[in-house]
View 1 (tube, rainbow, N blue to C red):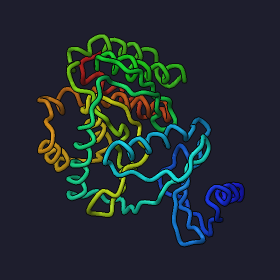
View 2 (cartoon, one colour; view 1 turned 180 degrees about the vertical axis):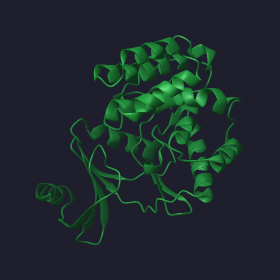
View 3 (tube, one colour; view 1 turned 180 degrees about the horizontal axis):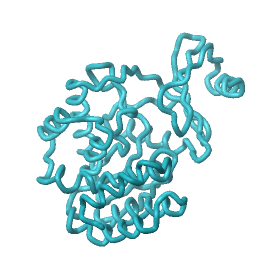
Length: 284
């Protein structure tokens, strides 16, 4: 901690008078730092597998090009990220869900000519390849589903027989999803821990994993850990349409990607959840 405080004194020009760990930080430790001048910042250190440069770039990209509320980046390199502090009660009630739907629908209004992005990003500590691709099915198949499943298998966390079923699904994606969606900017990691609120409104979103995608993959992620519920979807539909059978057919399919991220990072129960989704999709 002394070395971190020394580094912050050099970076910020003042030494923190108090530092407290913040919730989350399962991959990279995060602190609230109270400064001598009365200011407050959030400090993140890179974990063993992580570089913080992509996260800083993504936050700046969202700040500069969209209206999504995110922290300001005050300093960043591969090992250290210092951000403005945003209030957070942790409560996601109906008013927060509606405000989140307004913000996410507006974010999805930022479109591009291709899926992917001009550079690779990260999801958590894991590299997220974003080659610009004209076809959504090809992008999701090669750079999300098969890519992450391959990482899981190489790490010894995904059995070969489940990987083979994912390959079988990958060959049938056209049975489930359409290649015709417009590429939309997404946050990419919308679980509750990345949603900051004051109890009635969103104060900010953190830890993005951005790229241009079919926005349904973002909507699906909000259901995986029950981040948002019916009020979010009702409000979102007032702003943007959702194609029929999203919840019934495509939601589980798209959630295979974040589930595989969790398999790669944590293993365990998430392998069983991948197996369950494949069975529900009829891939035995």
